[in-house]
Length: 75
Image (tube, rainbow, N blue to C red; front, side, top):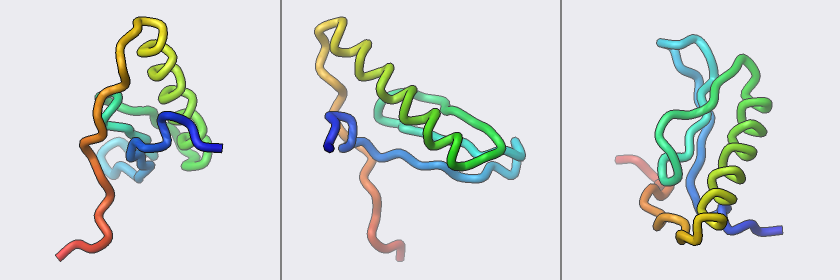
C-alpha cells in the first residue's frame, strides 16, 4: 500500500562520528533518529515520518515538495 509519504527519500546509514545508525528524511525534518540496530532505526524513522505527516494534515498545511531524489549513478 502506498502512503502519501512514500515519495520522500529516506535513508539509514552508519555514523562513524556518533557510532550509531542514523535515519533521516530531509524533506520533512532536520535531524534524525538513531540507534544500534539499522532495522529498528528504519522502523522508528517511519513512525516519525508518519507523525510529521499527521501534524501537517491536522494543521491543514500541505506536505512540503519533494526535493531530495535518489541518484542512480554517481560520476
